[in-house]
Image (cartoon, rainbow, N blue to C red; front, side, top):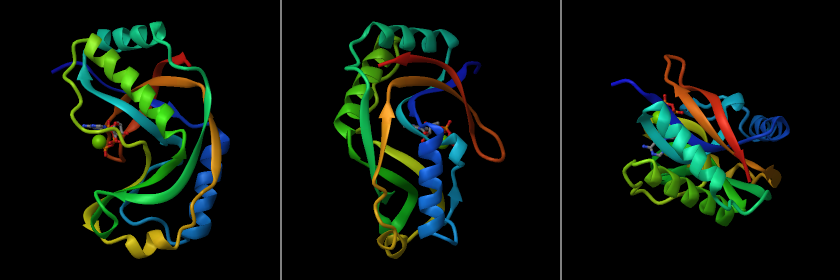
Amino acid sequence: MGGLRLFVAVALGGDARLRIDSHLSEHVPGGLPGRPTRPDQWHLTLRFLGSVAESVGDRVLGWLDQSDLGGPFTMRFGPVGAFPRPAKATVMWLGVEDGGDRLAALAAAAEDAAMSAGLQAEDRPFRPHLTLSRVRPPQDVSGLIDTIPPLDLRVPVDRMVLYQSHLGRGGATYEEVDHVAL
Ligand code: ATP
Ligand code: MG
């Protein structure tokens, strides 16, 4: 099957990446368990589109471009947590303290855009998060999480980005294809 592996996400500025990275270095000096994600690849996924024709990406961006996305806003990060639960973590993440409602609205707009492009509906509920590490096999990280203070970091959100994911042996890398301003 041809096609591009695409997803819609909120990107982070360089300042935010540095702040998150130094917070983790300070409070988790041994590094996170599992396979940590790279700071230069950090993002908040709004809608994973899957492996699709290039035209799907165009249609999704075109739809979003015509949508009222509500304008720029500020979100605030919070505590580190884990899916599906800290006692059996497979994904460690940085959570969102404020602005999750706006991110959910952007995810809903991306869902509408995906529907308009003919994709299957997403059945999983949207949980805004920034993936910090993938843990396989699962580990109990509840003790570790309790030692990490919440990161009180505000970041501006002013665009939605369409990314292409390139799967590789050293993990995926993402390339910005296009974006829409909020
Ligand atoms: P790898 O799959 O090699 O671990 P990755 O998950 O970062 O790397 P992709 O699988 O291409 O790379 O995923 C791109 C983004 O979309 C990531 O944020 C990922 O968490 C998210 N994602 C991937 N698959 C899904 C899915 N089925 N539903 C929701 N989000 C997904
Ligand atoms: Mg993946």
